Every structure is written in structure tokens, then in C-alpha cells.
Length: 275
Ligand SMILES: Cc1cc2nc3c(=O)[nH]c(=O)nc-3n(C[C@H](O)[C@H](O)[C@H](O)COP(=O)(O)OP(=O)(O)OC[C@H]3O[C@@H](n4cnc5c(N)ncnc54)[C@H](O)[C@@H]3O)c2cc1C
Image (cartoon, rainbow, N blue to C red):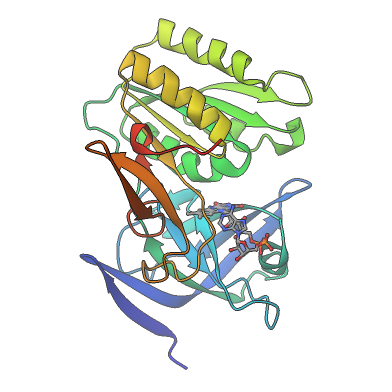
């Protein structure tokens, strides 16, 4: 078996390769954090892109699982992933130990766009959606772009990355079911407050259709460019099987696009949000 396979997806060279696990630890009741050696990647990784990872679930299912890059550490050439344990794949992933390797295909998909002249951005994450938006906060901090983030979760235990975002200088608002603060109207009030105090150049969301519809509503009224990272069940992750399609509206026409190839990041206003 080959240890590395190279693929040309569009104009990008993508590698399917064994990467070394530097750590893989439980960080809360339901979440794990994995760091891998990224020194052998074929191309740079952008916030919003993802890797298609063989979780080692052996005979149970041959499908890999998609995971967004959570942190990109260029200096020490590592990548971090934050994952929620859900079913067979993610449970098998927790069994992999430091020093072992994991087969990983990527970086895949289209990442977020962060305009050079942006000064302040808004992030709206629900649950594990923060795993996708955190790398954007990291990039924003590097470019001197200020960030306001609303993190929504079931409980305080699930509010991950808040301290990391604060470390990047972000203004962080936490809402939870536990506190009774995560309802849409309260989140609307927080967004209205942030947009009244700051000139928001762009907004980004991941993790909740309900909150994405809210952000779609507010950003269209205020004419703020916005993007969403979508999650759909994937088959091949390279645009062949059409398992991960969703509908977008372009020039008044509905177009079916693949989350793995044309996404996972899309302009929020174009995405047809199912109830
Ligand atoms: C582009 C992208 C980025 C993602 N990034 C992250 C991340 O950073 N951290 C994280 O915890 N999760 C992320 N997810 C969701 C993650 O891929 C699923 O939670 C995971 O595949 C579940 O696998 P499982 O075997 O544990 O669960 P199961 O429920 O047993 O999975 C069964 C099947 O459904 C698919 N599936 C289940 N839920 C999802 C889902 N939400 N999205 C896509 N496929 C799903 C699996 O691939 C599998 O084929 C991402 C999904 C996408 C599409």
C-alpha cells in the first residue's frame, strides 16, 4: 500500500497521507482535541478547510469522516482538530494514541474569505461549529483584525475555545441552554448590540441552521457580507459522489452544489436554509 497519494483537485494538489499524532486528549465530557504533524502537507491550509480522516473504525464502516482545521500552527508545522464524539467514527478516533499515525486527505474545500481591509468581524458559532471558526479567529488576530464572537452551546462544559478566542483579543459572548440564554431572540439582541457598537465588516457562522437564518436576516438588512461553513454527510469528499449536496440561489436560479468541493464555505445569502 502507498503511504502517500497525490490528487489534483481543481488547481490544488491534495495529499492522502499518514500523519503522526502528537497528542489526542479529552478536553471535556464530549469533546476531544488532536494535534498532528503537518510538515508533509502539499499545500497551505486555510481557515474553513477540512481534512477527510480515517478514524480507524476498522470493519464497522469504510467511510472516512470530515473535520475542519481548528488551529493552524505554521511555525511548528502542526495542525489541531477539535472533535465532538458522536458515533462510530469519532469514538474510534479517541482510541488513537500519541505517536501513532492517522490517514488524512486534505486540505479540502474552499475556506473563509477575510478581506485585507477588514477591521472587525463577527463570529457566530453553535456547539462544535467553533471548531471551524476558531482558525478564522486565529487568522484575524494575526492580521490585526478585531473579532467579536458569540458562542452558543448546551452547557458551560461544551463552551470550548472561549479562552483561546479571548487570547486572540476577541470580545466573547457565551450563551447556553443551561443558563436559558441561547434562544434566538437573545442572540439577536447580542448581535444588534455588537453591530450598534462596532462597524462589522463581515460575519461568519457555523453549527446551527436556526442561528444561520438569524444571521442571514440581520446581515442582509444591514448589508454585511457573511459566510457560512456547512456540514453535510460526505461520501468521497472529492466531488465525485454528490452525497453532500445543498442548494444555493444564484442569479435567481437554484443551483445544487457540493459541500466538499464548492464548499464547505458559502456566501450566507446564497444558501437556502432548510427549516
Ligand atoms: C466540512 C465538515 C467539517 C466538519 N468539522 C468538524 C469538526 O471540526 N469537528 C467535529 O466534531 N465535527 C466536524 N464535522 C462533523 C463530523 O464530520 C461528524 O460529526 C462525524 O462525521 C460523525 O461521525 P461519527 O462516525 O462519529 O458519527 P455517526 O453519526 O456514526 O456518523 C454516521 C455517518 O454520518 C456522517 N455524519 C454524521 N454527522 C455528520 C455531520 N454533522 N456532518 C457530516 N457527516 C456527518 C458520517 O460521516 C458517517 O458517514 C464536520 C463535518 C463537515 C462536513
